[in-house]
Amino acid sequence: MKQKILNAVNWMRRNPEVVLLCAMVLCALVIAFHAGEVSVLAAGIVPGVAGGSHVTDEPLTTDLTRQASPSLLLNEIDRQIVKIRPMATPIDQLSRYAGSKHAGSMVVDYYNVDTKDTSTVLTEDYDEPETVASGTVPTAYLHTENDEIFDVSDTILVQGVLGYEPNGTTRSQNELVLYVMGRDEDHGLTVMAVNGKKIGDVEGCVPSIPADTTLIRMGRAASELDVMSPQFEALPKKAQNFCQIFKMQVEQSTLQRLANKEVNWTLSDQEEAAVYDMRLGMEKSFLFGVKGRVWNPDKKENIMFTGGIWHQAGKTFRYTETLNNDQVVELMREAFTGNKGSKRKVLIGGSQLIGMFNKLDYTRVVTSNESVSKWGIDFTEVRSKFGTLYLLLSEIFDECGMAECGMVIDPEYLQKYSHVPFSTESLNLKKSGLRNTDALVLTEASCLVLRYPNAHMRIIQR
Image (tube, rainbow, N blue to C red; front, top):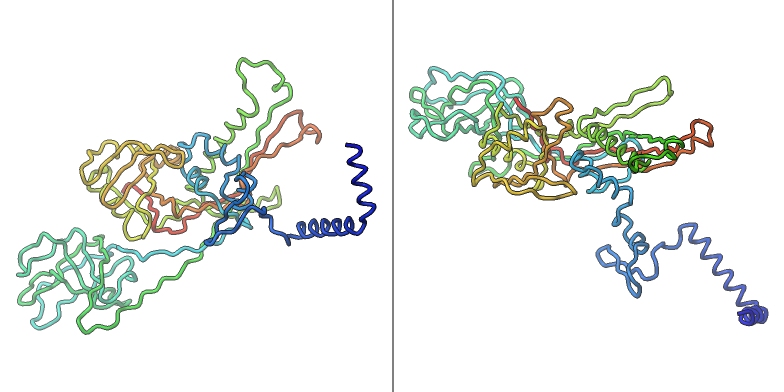
């Protein structure tokens, strides 16, 4: 070995220009690497046609994977967190499995596209006239909570009010359908009846409709010579949420660590219990938190609070005291239609709501299957012609006094933003002279947003 080293030294003495050139190249590579001018991809990684990467001439290792696809492998801390009692915190669990986006600020701005409302209610009674002059057009003026969702040529289904047979005197089995003739601030909606009532000699009159009747917007009806239709525009709406800094500190004194114990209870066990408690608190904030900013006079700084997804959902379904099969069908219709969302969604709810689901006698239209495991959680699968719901009890609703409530969530449009990813930090309280303890601080600064509000729905008892 000594002779080989001497030979190498003699060669370098005889070839100083080669040694100098190699040193210059090495220095240049080091400088370029630190300046960000050299790709961090290994030589065996070849870019793919559609943006992926391929490894050639060497085995695929975790180092190569992290270089070619940094987000493919989960961090160890996330793997540990998602295994800690996932059934108790389904929202937090779903968001961690879906992955989070890095937020460069505690304030998160994002865009979402909403859908136009499909229904509203009548604000005042409409009473049919006793007589209608012959030869007049039988129109009626209706005032609703949201006239803006209707345009000229829209058709309206009047829920709970039956229409008439073609003779105009016999009640039909079909509900009343109206046609929108116009809309203005003074008169509200000007409508005609498609299957209306005959009053005197005039056919097609709009019958009486009580207040609070639901009016459902249906398709537009154009005449043969119509070339144009009322315009429809949809623009993304800017929304905002705040990241909230969640923290939990675990301490164990030195004497406590050294003491003999009947069971092996360590700081790691305390840390797991702290993570569970922290996730429970985060779950409540992610669901029912209110976005805000408060100035703390003692700390002389602002504290930011995240807004919960319960308030972000775009739809609300209300059911009567007892949930029956018809209402379940209507619930699933509301959850899966009119929003272009996924056909598989998650329904989490309090014990009273889930208990009503368990008491139902399912039919061929709505069926309940065995448990399915997704995102590390065991769900009960409920199927219908509209879509599939993954049902799960969330005791968070019970703890917040909402045992009869629930929420339908589309996991495809649930997005988590993290300004500070979940991390643990050891505090050296001994050196700082504070306490003779071992201490860990768990920290995450994050928020949840619903990217498509109408794909999610609140469930509330009337």
